[in-house]
Image (cartoon, rainbow, N blue to C red; front, side, top):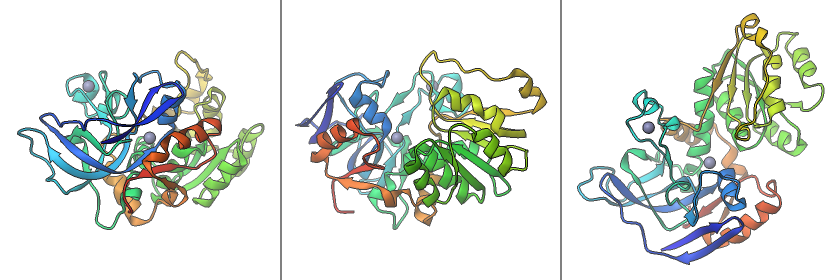
Length: 339
Ligand SMILES: [Zn+2]
Ligand SMILES: [Zn+2]
């Protein structure tokens, strides 16, 4: 089969490699659409600490079941599916309480095992979700990033009565904007880059200029109260530290951004009590794919409309282009068939 393989930092090549054979409990999936995520770009640039090379990347996969592993019951060949890339061990504490996204022995498709930048990929049948009727493979490949927005909104219990501020208008921030809007919330977004902020505005957020003076602007917008829900999707320590000043008393902070390992952040301790603030981490997603797929199918998620489709053979040049300028494309999806 064809595959795009990361050989090491800065090295990606197209190759003909043997197809994976699905183990018991797994399905072999013919990839029809494979989204390129910042995580893949980090594998290419050598900034993903968890990956080992060589590796076939991609954890945003839509396709069709081709075969099942020995003795395996699962969706029959021909079923259109997306692959939830987070595979838990099933025995550790987070797995026991239904949080395999935080598994102590986590395996991620496209990071710890071969992913979807290939004609075929193997994955546990329990990690497959059926694609709703009428949704294209290209759109279905957005299930994973949209699911991250669903997880963040579930963690923050975002509802129609809420006003939400999203910090950062990258792909995760944009997913939060759209999922929060679909729940009826009033959504503000901020970013240092005007072009990203313009995209957030296109997707329905009210833009707020980022940088110096943000806290004052947000207090002005909310009559001095602060935002009921603040969602952090920049990973910048200063932005993370600002959440406690941006949030209203009694409000919720949801942290999705990733700071560098070992990076500390400082929060004024008195505000935990004074504001009775709730601070929640939110990691990837768990059991959010069905809701994400329904949202995409309903038309509530417009982000796929600004993404670009490429053939897998173009992967080396697309990665080189994005390594030079991560903002060169909103989002790239490799499609292997007209969808
Ligand atoms: Zn992703
Ligand atoms: Zn586990």
